[in-house]
Image (cartoon, rainbow, N blue to C red; front, top):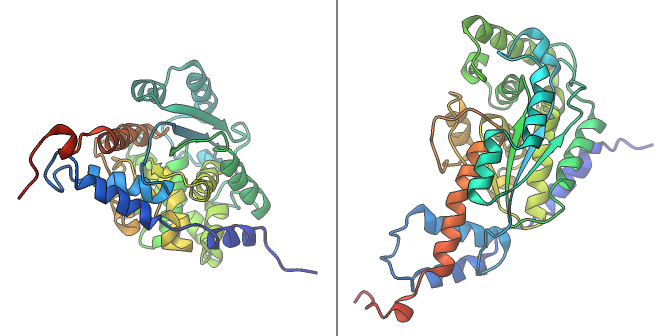
Length: 338
C-alpha cells in the first residue's frame, strides 16, 4: 500500500528544474559592452537579452522559433451566469482560430510567430467549482502532462495563452485562494459582464472558496479544485519549457493564474517567465506585483487567447536581433567612451 499522490510527480519534477546559466549571462554582458551605444541605453531590451541567454543556456540568445500555445477549456461554473457570453462560444472560437479569423492569428502572422491551439475537451465542462471539484487529481495531472507534451515540437521562445468562457471567474477563485482577501478584489468584468453579472461572479467565487476552504493550503489542490483544464495545461507547459530551456512569455489575467500556482509551490519555479502585458482586468496588476513580474506592455487589453503575450514576443524578438546584429565599436569604427 502506498499513499503516493499523482501530484508527487509534479513536486519531484519541480525539484529537478535547472537554474539560469550564469556563464551565458556574462557572455551577453561582455558583448553588450562592445555594442555601438551607451551602456544601459536600451533599458529593458538589454535585460531581455540576458534573460533569454540565462534560460536558453546559450551565450548567443535567439528568438528564431517563437511559439504561441493557446489552450481552450470549458467551465461548469458558467451555469451560474458569470459570463456575458454563452458556452457555445467556446466551440465557435476554436473554429475561428482554425480558420485564421481571430486576433491572435493576425498578431502571430504580423510577428512571424508559430501558433498552436489545443482543444481540452471543450464540449465537456469541468465541475462547477461552487459545488464540486473542477477536476480530480488524476485528471489534473494528466492535463498538466498534456500541456507539457504540447511544446514537444521545439521552440526557443514560448507564449502561453487560453480561451474559455467563464475562466476569469475561475482565475479569480484561484487568486482568492492563494492570496486571500475579499473575492470582489479579484473579480473583474472579464468579457464585459454588467453590474448584475459582476455580482454573480463575486457570489460564485465566494461560494467556491467556502465549499473548498478546508483544502486550499496546497497550491496543486487549489488548481484541481478551483482551476480549469486550460490553466492546468498552461502550468504544465511552463514547467516543460523550463526543463527544455525555453523562456516563457505569460499572457494576461487567466494565464497568470497558472504561473501563480507554480509560484506558490516555490517562487523560483517561474524565474524563466516574463509577463507579456498588464491586462485591463483590475486585479492583474496586484497579481503581477506579488509574483515580482513587470509587464512588457500595458495596452488596456483583456482579450486572452495569448494576444498580449504574442505582442510582447515582438519586443523579445527585437531585443535578440539588436544583441545579435548590432555592430560593435570596432566593427563600425566608432570611438569608444574614454
